[in-house]
Length: 78
Image (cartoon, rainbow, N blue to C red; front, side, top):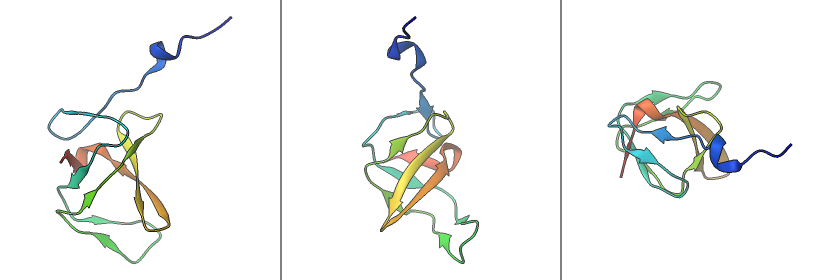
């Protein structure tokens, strides 16, 4: 039994309802505290080359060597 990959495509949408794809740029719309770190992601921070995850309400972004998973409800497409 084979599964067609197109059937399992997860569609991530930003806070405005725009569809997010791998490689898109996003802007943070609210200050976010990072769990487990003493840092805050400031509003207006832009992340380039995002990666979608298996969850429709999360995306991965890179900050230096770190990879963070952010909720799409706090992001808008740049």
